Length: 306
Image 1 (spheres, rainbow, N blue to C red):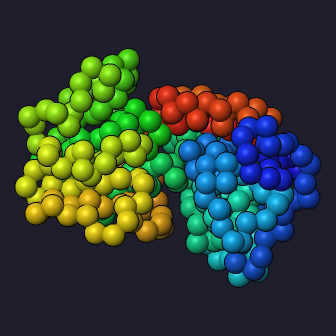
Image 2 (cartoon, rainbow, N blue to C red):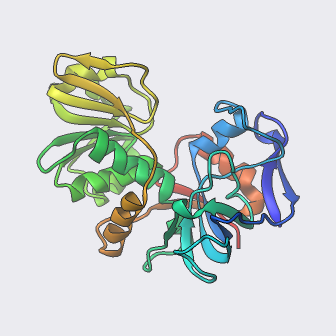
């Protein structure tokens, strides 16, 4: 099978496209024919060696999320069968969605929503479920809460705007002015062009500030939080960060079946849509990673494997 891999850490020059043997699923695993794979900042951060693990081994196939069809199941798998259309998240220690075939634990394989493409489905797990956990679990979002989302036009942010509106929040989107129409189409009530205005210097106060791109700190944001406001970042926050009733939190835990069921239902109901900026063929993975590194994508970047 064709796969996008690295044999050492570095820039895009270390990325190779090679033929590898098709992976074999273990007893609790599912083998998937990858139709599309989502591209995320975590992919080029792994390539750079920024997220190293003692379990890392080369060659390392990149990619953390995909959508496709079940080809084979392990003997203990009960929920899926050959031919099922699914979304999957390979283990952080078993990377491999940038390939024609990938293996994932049954626990991280989910039914694909019926009303979207494989490309759209592949864009959901990392960005969509990160935004859900950030706003619901860390931020405690609910109807009427004044919510500001930094990086609102990006992969995580564009999901965040829509999720916040599903919960009935009042949403302020921070993005480039050129993306104001896009984020308003997602439901944003107010848009701040970060090039022209620094929201941390403004007079408005927010119940939740979700920094989907980890560009601002709790220290910068706390003056525009409400007395019991919560700042949530996609970047890990060391230790407890509090200022009176104001708190800083990191996106908690990992995705669950319940999270994906929630997202799947809202997508099928038409309450959340997946915005795809660009789709690259698998053999242009370098170009896709380079585009992700610009941090200028509007919505998600996807690799098409077949």
